[in-house]
Image 1 (cartoon, helix red, strand yellow):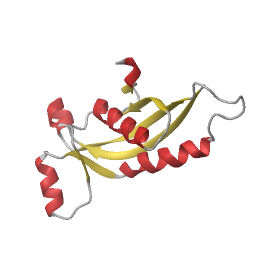
Image 2: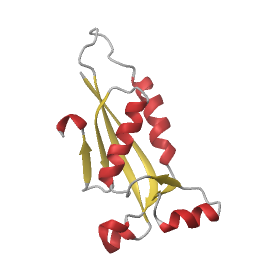
Image 3: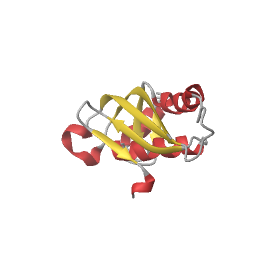
Length: 133
């Protein structure tokens, strides 16, 4: 049994490794699909949707309306010095890296996650599943 839930968050970022356009500070409405897999279930309810929401919303919404910066980005130091809230991550903020990061955060919370999809735009998304690697 697989349960899929959809979420979204708004965030700014830049990825200096991804060329001039993406190297500038810009924002996205990130759309996230979380797939939870239940190899065995009792034939009634695998997991309440509200239980999945309580985990996913807490993790995913923690990025909402923040600037997400690679910890080695020079802007991270400027924002820290200015006491301006932002989220520092140990990777370039590509969709691929964000997918892995969100997957790992949800997995650490005990969610039976099997796959995570993240879209930066309507036409571009990344699907991450460790079982497919």
